[in-house]
Length: 138
Length: 382
Image (tube, rainbow over all chains, first blue to last red; front, side, top):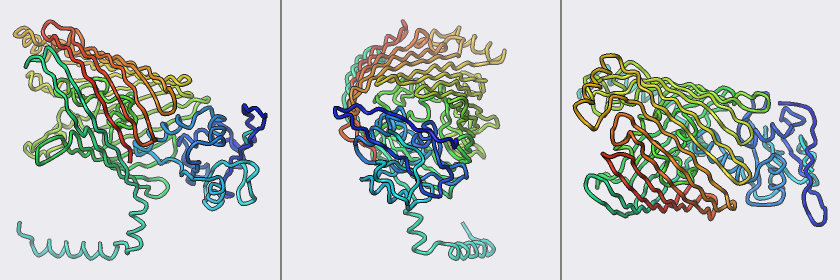
């Protein structure tokens, strides 16, 4: 996977002009410091299931519908329902398992910090020192 | 059956080793915890109005539990996984001799990377786009599938003629190239047409009675939402009922699918080409001269095209057309055409309510079949 740092800019439509910043976070032992959208899409499409060092990717996502989730997948050129169809085909073919769905961004942060090989996404403002940011979506 | 002293000793030694190696209660609980159990079922209501069937015009309506699949999956370390799939169809009941129970898949996979995988065991081979998922009802927008994938049609035209049903060894993967992915798959398995359903001599029921094998594969390209590929298999068909014996057969397939905004499109083409020997061809020609039901050309053709639209994340609609031609059967030489429209609603992710209308026609003086079918179904994932 590429190690160049890329900033993905996505203007969010909104009457107030407010922009949500989404941080893609990973466990500190994950062997990449930066990730591009192509690789991020491959990971969340379950195409890539291992990091470069051969360790398993532990994938986390948010349950339900919310602006953060919409923004994250929009930056990858997908809708959440499209991703579900991709996951379902892979699961029912026995080829993998869907991301672990969590109910809050706090839970995502805790799980990513505690799970080797983990990756997830949270609001940039919530990031702590217990994880590392490998991409930012603005 | 008498058990000899040596056999008793062997059994005792085996059981002793097994007990010593067996996991304790805690480990056994861990085994269960890591095992993923899931599946799906689809219940269906069908109303049919058919004309041109030998028994005369027929109307029928009824409910059935069309299909239930139980799936088991487990990761065996970081590189290996196992998967099992048991399928029950048509309100399966041994008491009433309804439906069927089938071991659909049971395989182990070695996953080196997305670029290289090896799958060993009973599996569905990769051929075109729909073959692997033809029985995955939660993935299918329709209830009645395109003709060659529809098991309800199999008594007239066995599905296995058009698409390979089983493989036992497969290598496959996806290679990233210039922002796209090149998919490849190659497999080997039994020849479907020679699998015996009853012991024949020394052959075990469910095994291939020949030494020749099915060999096949697919080469495809994926770029964003576009997926396209070509597939092929080589094997023999069993045409003993025509006094032809084993006849060389090639299946060639092409598939294309893509999404555009909320539209989705999928289509396939399958050509089944036979290469009879001179003697086989002469025999077939002779037979065809004695009956108007058969011709001397064994080849077959199928295609389908579907367009759909996701009205919202929960509602979808679609329409498809499929066409099937069997040159050897006079009833199907002129083709069998299906037109279908339908839609569905997902109140929550695991549940899909489907509605579908199918209009089917043959184009033959020998078989003037007209069928109108209305399906209503619920597919549930658990």
